[in-house]
Image (tube, rainbow, N blue to C red; front, side, top):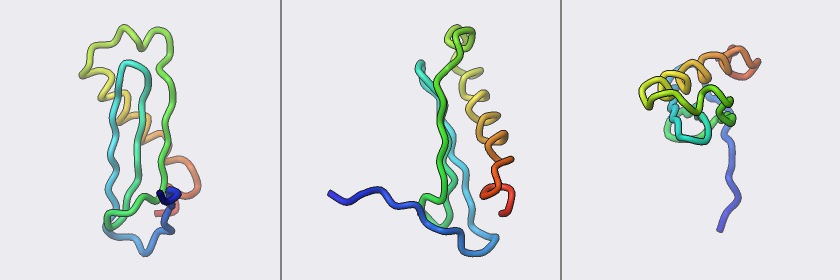
Length: 76
C-alpha cells in the first residue's frame, strides 16, 4: 500500500474540479492531468441535513467554489 500523494500544479491548463455530497458531508477535489492537486471536505451543518439531494449537490459545488479563495486554488 502506498501513501496518498498530492501533485504540484504544472501550468495553468488541464484542471478539473469534482464535488460530491452525502448525508454526512461535502467534499471536493482539484485535479490536473488525472492527479490530485488539492482536496477539501466538511461535515454538514445541522440544518443542511434536511436538504434534498439536489440541494446537497449544489452545496458541494458552492463549497468547492468557496475553497477557491485559498492561495493554491486562486493562483491557478
